[in-house]
Amino acid sequence: MLVEKIISPCISICKTDPSTGYCYGCARTSEEKAIWKDENTTNEWKINNISELKNRLSGWQLSSFEESYDFKIKNGISLAKHKMMNK
Image 1 (cartoon, helix red, strand yellow):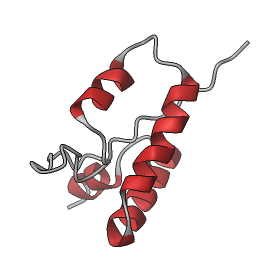
Image 2 (cartoon, one colour; image 1 turned 30 degrees about the horizontal axis):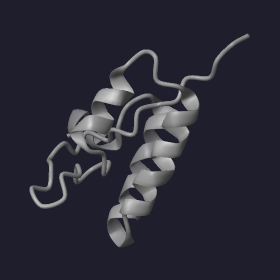
Image 3 (cartoon, helix red, strand yellow; image 1 turned 180 degrees about the horizontal axis):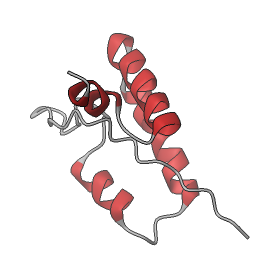
């Protein structure tokens, strides 16, 4: 059985808000980032976490995250990295 790989929600905007502890780019906490790197983390947890992350974001941050994450899924590289490489 082939298990689908769930792409990390990191969109290469890696700065943490000191008030909330959430990353400005992907809205993850440091703990969630560590869980994503754990090889034993289930796809179910990852899918649920992405849903939680989207609920943390709103307005332009949500739109930007969704555009960047969709780009990463389709192209294998974050939109921010892609734009930096093509300057």
